[in-house]
Structures are given as C-alpha cells and as structure tokens.
Length: 207
Image (tube, rainbow, N blue to C red):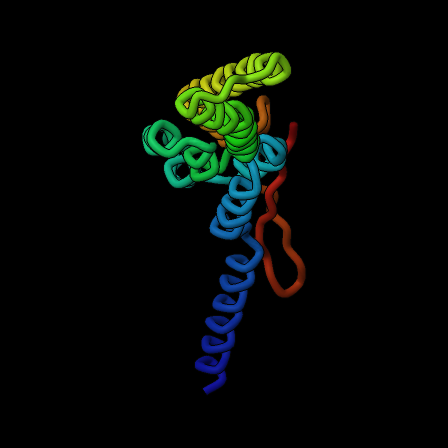
C-alpha cells in the first residue's frame, strides 16, 4: 500500500513539474499576436519593437505575419485611377498619400470652377449680344489663369495617385520584411531555472 502511494505521489510530482515547465516557457502565440498588433498600428513607427519580437518567433510565424500584413498596390491603383481623391491610398492605409490626393483634387477642381462658372456667364453675354467691359476682360483673364492652375494641380494629384500605391506598398513590404528578420546580431538562448517544487526555462535575447 505504501509503495503504491509513493508511486502515485511520484507521478503527481512529475505531472506538476511538467505543467510548471510548460507554463514557464515563453508563449510564441502571444508574441505573434502582439507583433501583429504592432504591425497593424504601423510598421514604420513600430519597427524596433517588431524586430525585438521577431527574434522570439519561428520562421513559419514570421512568414505568416508577413503574408497577412503585406500591402498590395493593384486595387488602390485602380481606385485612384477611376475614382481619384486619394480613395485608393485611403483603402491601402496610406494616410499621407490619401490626404495629398484628396487635397490636390479638391483644391484643383475648386480653382477650375472659379474660372468655368464666370466663363459660362461670359458665353451667355456673348450670345445675348451684351459687350464685356475692360474690367470684366481683365477679371476673366485672371480667372482663366487660376483655372489652368487648378487643372494642373488636378493633373499632379492624379499622377501622384497612380504612382503612390506602388511606392507605398514597396516601402511597407520592405520595412516589414526587414523588421521580421529580427535584430541584427541577436542571439536567442534558453536559460533553465529551477526551484524546490518546479523547473522551467526562460529566454535570453542578446543584442
């Protein structure tokens, strides 16, 4: 009876030690989740933290994170081409590109409308036989320059919208790939630790 109790006690101790060791090991799943959150917040501003976490991830986890968070340029390019106003860049998550595209389009079209509305009024005067005065002629000439400037600004914004998605995707993906490689020269090692009732392992990262 005593021998059986000793065996049961020994088995129970081994089970508790194994559970304690498993609990002491770092959770790569938790690190992967934290890394995904950092990437979603922004690769460029969180690059250093992503590098530090990547040192604790397996190659398959790094690849999975890259595939999940890499940027594509085709759909944003199509949206910027057919819709404009920075819509494609907004969809891509490029706030800077979206703001520039929206601003140039709104300001450019606004400048053009400042010219086209009075110009339509001048056409009405011409067809009705009314003559324009010298002041009106000077004003229309100035407005025509503003209108042409507006069209130029619209053209710049449209061209920017076609190029920006490809540049942003390339920069984002390159930074993400480099960050997921982990810090250069980093050494990751397991350090065993034990106490009276349990044992386990910790992770040491040296830079």
